[in-house]
Image (cartoon, rainbow, N blue to C red; front, side, top):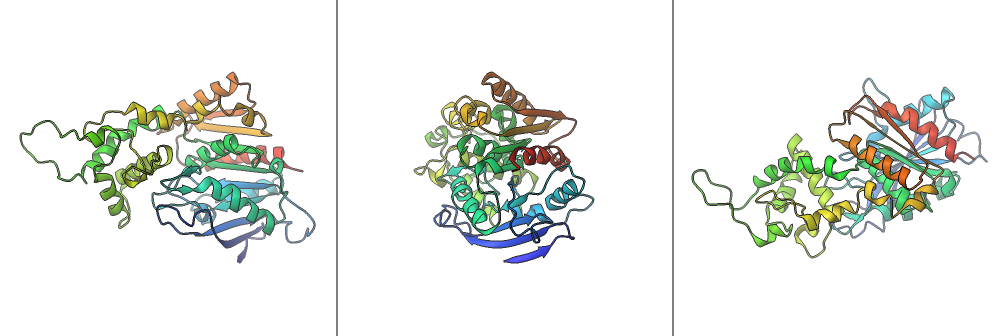
Length: 363
């Protein structure tokens, strides 16, 4: 366990934990995981004091360790929390940064037979480990989670699926309204994947593309596997990164142990046609559509906050508006805010959400 004093504004603890839940994950990703914990300024001296715990879920292509690193012209999350406490915007809390990175670039913090049981990892291993190791107020009414993008999705999904664990949640530009946030980018992803087609396309006159029966059922014809193997050997380009994200979402929302790679795809790889049967599997995981099934869990929260910039380049703002309407329909108390911004460079919004979470979860 490594202890790093944080500019006299708390202490950063970096420890490792061997996960039994992830021991047989299908991607072969590491089972030894860093759990980074920020302890507030009074923790070292107030030996009998216990604190609410806030769990920070990183966005796609990121993980817990990245959230505590140096940031040029900006604050990392521990620095931001220390400032908010110093300015009395919020009280002291333990902040936890789990590492849920995968070889697909991340995950959505839910269980998937194609990626691993990352929801179970959080609620069955990380939470108990933190409560055993640190002086937290070890009860759901004093435990919350927050995140941006995929982390924001994870916060909302956990609030609905695990209400006995989490008492409050905050989502910043979380994935929702899947028709708007995912479908538009898939044409670009299909083009990236076509570079790994075997046999490759040939120039000149050609008959219509071969319509393999497998691709009509969302089955990989080999190009996805080849793409994933290539991405293990290089740093992905911008378009490849987005393709990797879309593939990871397919592995998250439509896992199938009997399919190649362990999941199905929502599009015909040859024609680009949306496969409605496969897409319905994605829709069931859309927070907008989940509200009706988990309204009681959401109503039990001590606080539910979410926001999104109205210029979000992934169109999450439309999903946020639909989510707010669904919450209103089912009488779920919440705070929804719109601001002038995009999907990027919005960490300053934690200045709004973290005090709300702390107020709801404090003793």
